[in-house]
Image 1 (cartoon, rainbow, N blue to C red):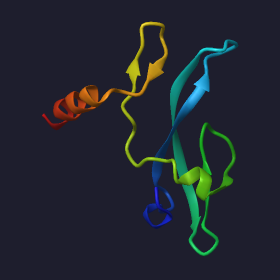
Image 2: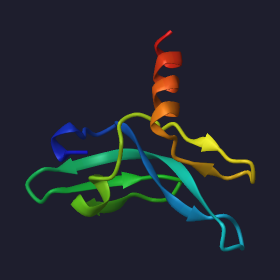
Image 3: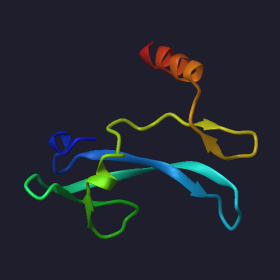
Length: 97
């Protein structure tokens, strides 16, 4: 996501792999990120999530955020994964109706 699209009060989503509890199994997780302030000159964003206090995020972090909540597919083992191309198309068609 570009810094020009971020505004204070906006909610975006952070989606990345994480460990499942005290195991080596991984899953995809999605967290809402609340934008507190945007500093275009220094290319940094003050944001908070999970009830934590606000922290400064730089391009390496905020460039991976998305405006819409990502669609994840639940696996048989209880984790989540990113959808295949066909699953994305089916979800988009279902969402459009």
